Image (tube, rainbow, N blue to C red; front, side, top):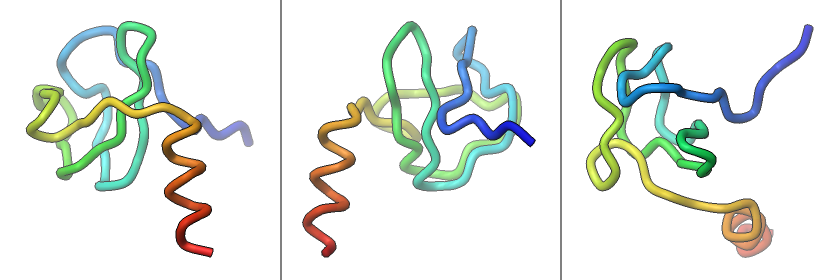
Length: 65
């Protein structure tokens, strides 16, 4: 089974339920979910998603080691 690390969203409405800490892509950018999102709910930077990048997320993981 193929798993997607960061599903691609094509609108500002979530295509699925997201839990805090999951990732999604929208308009070519990577976002981390900061508050649970229900399917069809709005994706809003600063409310339930925040922009991030792979380097930032790897540095966060490294700081936990």
